[in-house]
Length: 274
Picture 1 (tube, rainbow, N blue to C red):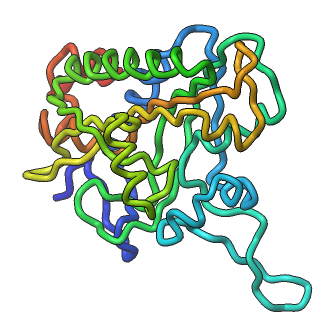
Picture 2: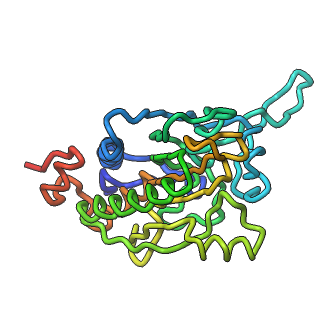
């Protein structure tokens, strides 16, 4: 019998149905992650699509054509043509256009909940093509964006440890800068622009359940955003995948979330089995 907390396979690799038990974990994680931000933090929920011209503006279609989900629709001619929207690959792409041409009076931070899609080649545990994520996005000066990212990563590791998850941090390539230039990838690692938090999501299966990214002035330049100091704004984000976090918790504590340690059930709003 399938556990109530399991993901259910579909004919499409990397695409799953979620059970009531699995969703209860996701809801608990969503609430807990939302609470990590300040009380006055603006929270936004994205649709699963984004304007194609935004994705082309940031160059995602060139760097990751194999991951991008394009949308086609029937036109007046009766033939299918590419739509003006694509499937959303990451929530933070919805943020930067909101500030295009703006000079920020103060540092700005938003919390984004998104449904995302990436046409992943593999379908091992945790490698989902359709998934949900929470991102915290910061627009500020260079110095403050980097320190914000590092502080939030430290707080995230502490929060994950409180959920009983052992994580390892590792420097990775930041996808926002593209994957084609070997020298650029080496520079990214040297500058530690992207740091991933790794955890086991299944037996012997280690994946990133969160990451902290410092984009330098990449998006500030593309969208003509000025920071509080009048210079081109820098940006950073902290991102968590809901499904991977849930899988990591199930792997760590067992298939029945109602029998997890009391403190963790309380933190995620899960009732105990009586």
